Image 1: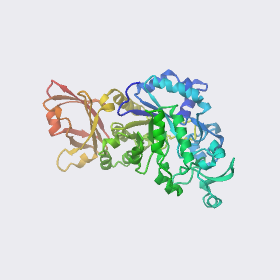
Image 2: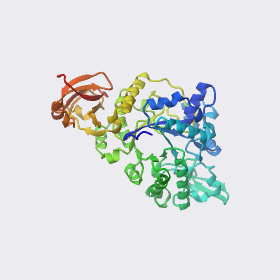
Image 3: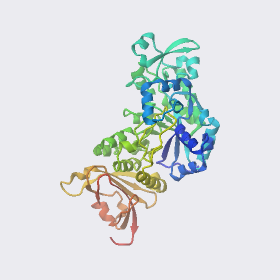
Length: 498
């Protein structure tokens, strides 16, 4: 297998929705073992280093029954699929009964075949690990009810949304629904008790088993099992879990990768526990609010932090990027996100401009037309990220925009990066993240360019300029951009004069 890049790209697929679409297209059931070579070749052609298959694990009838019975959920499902059928509601992919692959998508053998075909193209496989909860019909509920947070009759009466009665091999119990401290319980789940050392041991065993089936896991709501968060939610303080769990998994699989879904400014905390990547929700929120100053401040963090962030514009939990970031703002937000350091995290439907977020309870999504302008943009962006080594393995730095002239404050709307490859490859990405036209100067952090004449070619457009290297270093590169405009300039030495 090829050496892993410093800044890889990941593509998230909703497995059940994807396979249902392929099955309808072929007119027969398609499992993971029957994916066309062309589909997998496309992942390699687009430059993905990781494929994350969402919702491959076995779900049970109890979780599915909850998904089908709640009127407010059905209303959401019908808004997504006006022709909704009962079979479309397959239950949440996070209400898991076992970490074995669902028969509907081919079982463990089909997953192993799919993983091997990815590996032949130097692509790694990521799957889900859901540490906080299980489905109500997980075998542990009957055999090991003490693995779960217990409730009382009084708690059930006072907060029925957070507890349920269950039958176990040790008699009837009241168990808590999985939740975070800020919201009611998820009614199709039961909360695991991390204050019980036997539960922690069982979860570590689960992780080690999962690590034999994939190359990495995305850990759902990873911060919920941190001792301080668990104590805030349930009133007891467990022993730390993540550091010892990751150490155990890596003893079995040394190169195994962990990505955390994490919020509440706990990214650094989980990085210190051993996570390779953590969601960068902070950058996403600042892009959404168009707060350019806070975007630049966020990007001033050290690379020991930024290199371990997973940067995204959408995922299965967030609204679709095409509906959140209207064109051409979408273009500028994507350039800021995916030309920064860290893991580049893309989502199924993002490149085509899908606007409908598919709930994780559904195994079918709506048919939507492709936004050709957006698709063409992503084709160019992915090509740059795949074929330009500087963006995969190079050195990144942020460039502070300077006013183009006194009193011109439009420079405050710019975000700009410099990338330096191991060879002479030098690149400048500049984005005007504002609703107005703007001007600025960018002093390039490439002192080695002094004394050279340079050709600047925009890899995302058609602009071509000749410039003096010394002038770019000392006075700066002059930029004049329309609202939401981007340039990604490649700098090459030339014998031609400007």
